[in-house]
Length: 211
Image 1 (cartoon, rainbow, N blue to C red):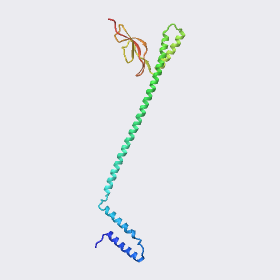
Image 2: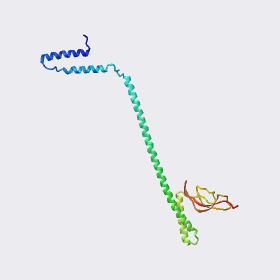
Image 3: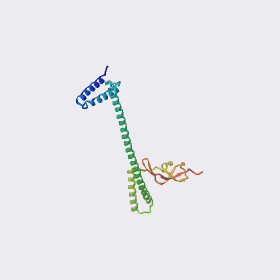
């Protein structure tokens, strides 16, 4: 009878266990070894036929894992840069909004100053006022005009100009020798600050000579 390595070891262990039990009447201390050997045999049978991993295979797998890690790192880097760009764009939008709100607040203040200048200009038109009062009004008017100029406010050109609906507001249509559509009188001066129109000029526009 031919025995494999594990079977032979098991047979020897059983023979020794039987002699030990016959001599002492006690259970052999190596009884659990047989179970371990049987379990080892089953494990060996279950792993038979599995290919062993060659060093080249391990290296190739490590290379794939490294490449995957690099791709993931690049993706995280791109995500970080996008988040950073979004944050910068949000900061710029807030700054633009702040500047727009601040600019509108300034323009509203300037409109109120312009209204004061209008009243002073009307007062200067009354020649019956006392000379001292007129001089005081004239000085205040000049100071307001200087203040407006310091903020880049300038009058809208109207008198003698072709009517421009972007800067002029027609309050009357009159007959006259001027070409039709010409501003012939300015009822209320208009003002602008750079590209912003603070107030259109209120003007009279000619419709041409009567037929």
